[in-house]
Amino acid sequence: MSWLPDDDEDETELDESDFRARPNPKANRPRTKRRPAHADAQIARVLGVDRGRYAVLVGEDTPEEHTVVATRARELRKQPIVTGDRVRVVGDTSGAEGTLARMVGIEPRTTLLRRSADDTDQVERVIVANADQMLVVVAAADPEPRARLVDRYLIAALDAGVRPLLVVTKTDLADPAEFLAHFEGLDLEVFTSALDEMPVERIGAALIGHSTVFVGHSGVGKSTLVNQLVPSAMRATGHVNEVTGRGRHTSSSTVSLRYRGEGGSGWVIDTPGVRSFGLGHVDPANVLRAFTELAEAAEDCPRGCTHLPDAPDCAIIEAVAEGRLGPSAPARLDSLQRLLATFAQR
Image 1: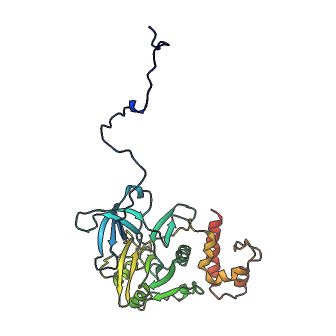
Image 2 (image 1 turned 135 degrees about the vertical axis):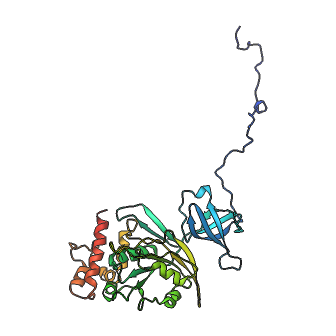
């Protein structure tokens, strides 16, 4: 018997009413890429992170400000959230013990300070967001100051649009004059200790109204200075190894601390001590900006000038050779050329 209908038999006509949807045993709604707007989210400042949990400040600069523990939403898992970020938080923002809020968005950043593992590493490590000042802490001795490391800090700061400041500690052990001569010509405010006592009031005045990230080699006294400025910080302090001359890492995480002075308040962002500061993420065109007086001379250089020792008609090299840029210019030119040579080899 044929399964085809006879010619004289009417075929059944189908319409939409004949469709039968298979029931969903889990009663789930179809997944969507649309996310809730979170119109009720509050803006909070990230103070620090510990094992995937973030301390955030809700209600900043209001009588109701308080700290909340938060985690990141799934949609933010691939985005770095760092100290200094301003984020949108939802959920339980009471700050009560055992509660956990959720970060659902990151506000636009004004600055982003970064470093790489070395000068050839294109992968950047984000240090802090939204800082507008960098306080570089060095010791006059024990450990010996490293001018080229400070150069790198300055380049990273200027590349990020952050104003650099310099503090020299332990001046009772050595005269920092020769070291500071390396930075003549830079628009750089310098604070020096007197008999190993820091000008805390002067430094504090420079912090008011700003978000300042503290950086420095291990063992230079950075954490000690932070504790003097913010007595409640209780940051761990260490010592310098007598054999290696290196400082021991004491601060293990980056944290934001509120500084309160007579004229107002600001933020101190303490970072772990580092012995190297890679600039693989920096645009080489921005390197020259850290050397103010050399950058001015470079305006007379031919187009495409590399400023390296073999660069023809380089106005910087000519100005330094003629002694027009001061006694520290040869050392600063050497530092600049070393950095530019590193970038040229990438």
